[in-house]
Image (tube, rainbow, N blue to C red; front, side, top):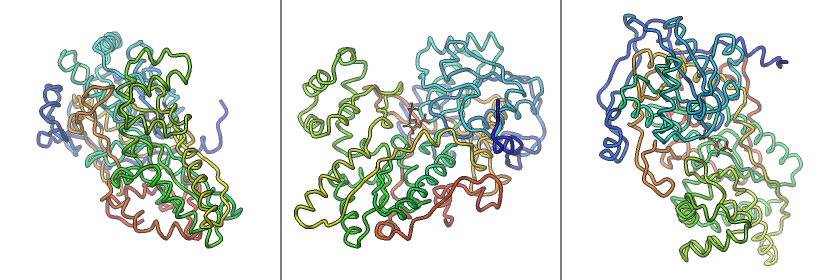
Length: 550
Ligand code: FBP
């Protein structure tokens, strides 16, 4: 296979790791923990894995390292650095005991159920060090929720002598990890389960998981493209660019990209919800900036739109919740042959308030809201073209204002959606280091006999040698939420905190960014070699959350 010069150069990169990894590690246990909410319900559902202590790695005398075999699963959407988690896990296991073995389950959680696996040897792992993508073993979105699936997992683990399963995934996949850990503990079948915090969305975080891996690289890739578009806009001076950014529900990606590139407008879903804004309020706020700039003779600009926006507009949120319940396992709906029949059927079942909202939407967008949910019951927001909806509504409003003599500018727009472009990028130094450290941490937790934990590496704004590694009980992050029409235990998603420093920074600066094109910032492409401030900086979000300057 031909490799690019950068790929070859990156294959030699040695990830930077916490100093604790240099010597022998002991697992220091803290006090018992509680879940973030719904404590009684979570405790009842996880009697064997609830309340476990926090774990921090410290230097100490070497315990005996019994040989173990581990199976690893990549779950959900791709995120840069997944291969380095596997490399760190492999190196950690081999260092603890050269007899340790690592297997990879193929194609995501279904590999465990269908018994599709490969042994990950040094030769295989070496090919993928510091590369983007999940292609070493592939990924998938199968939800592990049925005891029959768990039992299939036991069969293959017993066949291969696997003592531990590692699930590298987002909030839903780590919820699966927790359910699996509880089941295996209850069955006393000696299979540990450890999770690893992955997702470009950045919404799997709390005081012990400072960020999910992949967020840094993905945001840097999108910001490079936003910067390039801004330079094009400022050169040609004729287009408004509506840029939708991935991130599912939370607006962390959009916010981080705004902090890096200073667009004219940045919409944050969580703010829209807090201010109880309607779709028309959002359109008005965009139109206001366009008209003001046009008055100054500027007929171009950039607007960042989070992909989950639609779900945060309160009236739309109620509509989506009703649709979720109506469409959950609804075979009548699924087998209807035409879109028109489906539309009529839905209109007949919705409440009057939601039906009115549904009817007010352009047909294409309304249809997109009824498309299949993902296996976890989420609306597939990446399929909803919110940027086009906003363009249509903004153009209509500007035409009205023009007729009234209020708007004198010219409006030409271009729609963009950045998502898949960033998910398999070559990981930044930050993600390469962080992921390798997470993988190594996972190996140590397994060696220590732990189950029901997520690997945690903290103090991430400091140099890697000062990072603090350990484990967080997954039940600690859980609460009860409605999914597929039923209350389920899930890891609580971290949305943008409107009182947090990253959002406050946007709030302070957005007026200036709206009116002036000279404020654009052009971040340029990710750099892998060179000075620290160019190559090793974590996200602005992390820096601001740690009260540091950006
Ligand atoms: P994860 O939560 O699994 O990490 O997925 C992230 C994500 O990239 C979202 O930002 C996006 O909405 C979704 O996956 C797209 O899903 P798919 O890859 O199935 O199209």
